Amino acid sequence: MNKLNPRTTGVAIGVFAGGCHLLWSVLVALGWAQPLVNFILWAHMVNTSYVVGPFDLTAAATLVILTTVIGYVVGDIFARIWNRVHRV
Image 1: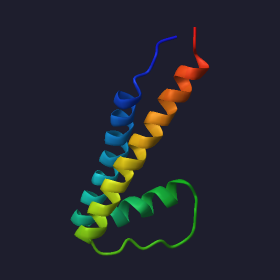
Image 2 (image 1 turned 45 degrees about the vertical axis):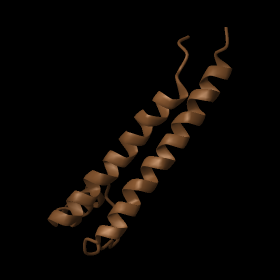
Image 3 (image 1 turned 30 degrees about the vertical axis):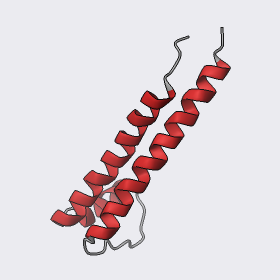
Image 4 (image 1 turned 180 degrees about the vertical axis):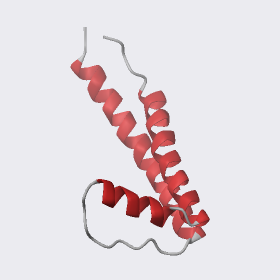
């Protein structure tokens, strides 16, 4: 099995997680998030009401930064566990 570099894996997962939440923040800012949520709930045959609030730059920046950092930590830990489990 290939070894994973914990830093590289952490960066990859962090950028992915932060990027997804950056995209969500852009959708909220453009006013496209509520129709997306409505569609997802409809497609899953879920009947409940979720309301997407107004865009808040501080909340969006906090969301993106925290998910990027948490993604990095999760990726780093995952790579270390992977390497330990797949020792040759």
